[in-house]
Image (cartoon, rainbow, N blue to C red; front, side, top):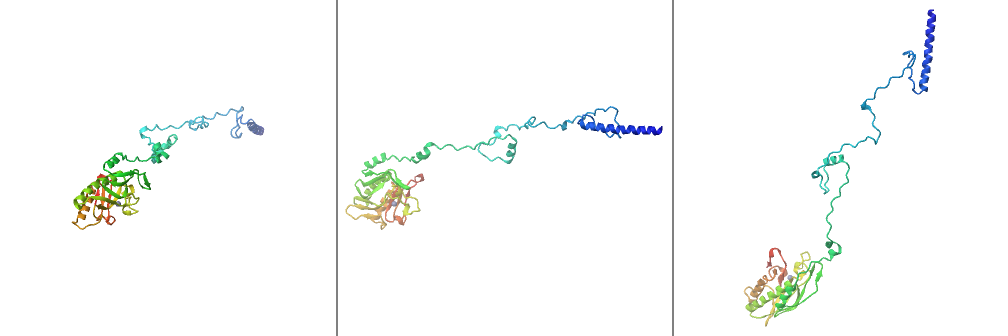
Length: 313
Ligand SMILES: [Zn+2]
């Protein structure tokens, strides 16, 4: 009897094993449609298999992200920068802090650097090359020359590198005073020469007791530097604005050259007087004693200086 129960129990246990194997096979075949039976020895299932308990709800924080493109919301944008704090359009290099802040903003196209104003058409191209400084109007000056009795004729404009004169005149004679060598001068210089010559006539009558007949001039227009120095700035001779006077001729005596004369002599008084009077008509007067280059002539020119300064030596 006891043996029979044991056999029955063994037989019943053997049957459970078979059922468990069948259940496991069903579980695989049905692709998890039925719960897989646990080891039959540990948890003998009930006669009817129960459905497995539902899995716990997934926590909210573990919810997977939505598919891309659906919920990728744009990150919050910083507030718009006030206009007064925006960098100037003049392309200043942004400071490092500004660069970092700008990186947070949406990318903006770089503002182009401001361009300089357009060159006026009259200053461009051939128009600029044709632009010339209008020469002074010598009409009034030439009228005065005629009233002074100056013999002259207009010459074409002179131009040689930086040298030249837009309205040169060829002066051939003064009133009552011959010019054995004509002079090429601006009208201003010619007028000064003519006005000075009237003073020279008076001085010749006073000091030499003879009428003035000739004024021998040397260089007038010549493209060269001061004192014939190539490195010096251009002489007024280069602009027909200067003249060298070499000697004076009076009636009945040998011409009087410009040179150092014995003190107190009539020749010395004459030369000192005409030289001093020249300063009233020319802005530059150099002669014997000024420097070695002017030991034998008077250099007279109309160089303009600041504040009307004159050079009389
Ligand atoms: Zn000179």
